[in-house]
Length: 367
Picture 1 (cartoon, rainbow, N blue to C red):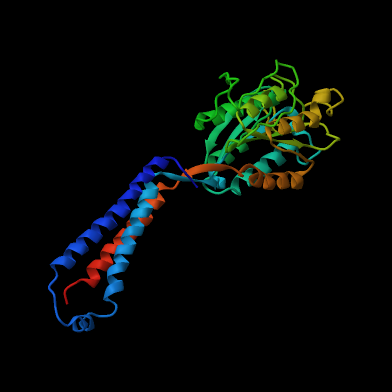
Picture 2 (picture 1 turned 90 degrees about the horizontal axis):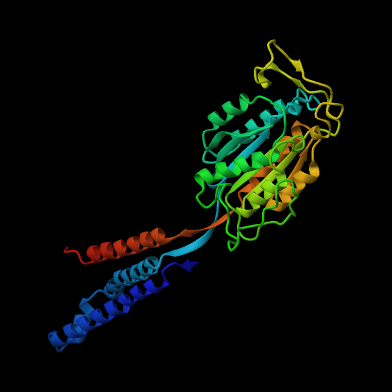
């Protein structure tokens, strides 16, 4: 426990002053007391418990003053964040390769089901945000505790071409900055004298994995993708931005090593086809549809996680993806913060003082 205002402990001097004043008052009373010849008779008339009854209220009052004096110094203690104290930004890949049927019925449907189960498994106070990315990245739902809103947005996810993993990370950082004032938006240049600042490499230049030093922010980013970056900023450059802000990024590579031909249903397309589906949107990945970009870039996803202090997971089917999502809450909520305890000290002091007054009035009441 630490004290924000240690100099306020001088308030504790009121306790010995009070006791000294009480001693002087009692001494004065003794001088004015009536002298009697038979002190034993007086003592016999006073109940044996009268002495400790007088001391208990005084002891409680002194204890209350001591506790209150410490409370004035604003004590703080390090506490662990509960799950509801964190915010998780889910960045889900909605590129056309997510329609691959190697994970039946296709990757996107399985990812949506796993995300829904993850959301439903959280406490009511857990804040979750949703970012969708393909050749773009957009914040679909800002961090919220409204599970129905999140699930409705996940149900409506549709696919597009391209994969912008780096842009998804940057969009997630900006979403966190909206509700966490300790996180600077991506457009803000961090000072080099700031402990959280890192040198961001030029666009297209791989970043060297350097985990941030110090405590992490209570907000985290979870990126689920089945491919490699094809648009926008490089993922490792975006990871440097996250690391500079002490935001952990957890990455999930989803899909098998032998992806099959992408087949999207009508709900997974953006309305750019005139007839009902399902739609065969091209040859299998690696044979013309996206080439190597349809294969999971595990090296980059691992580097992104290492750079930000997160963790990389690989899932090849629905069960493995569910296992990853079940692991995430234990990984992302191990946070600490300093919490002020003044209110608790004041509460204890009030109870002690109230008990002292109540006992004094009760034991000194008229018969």
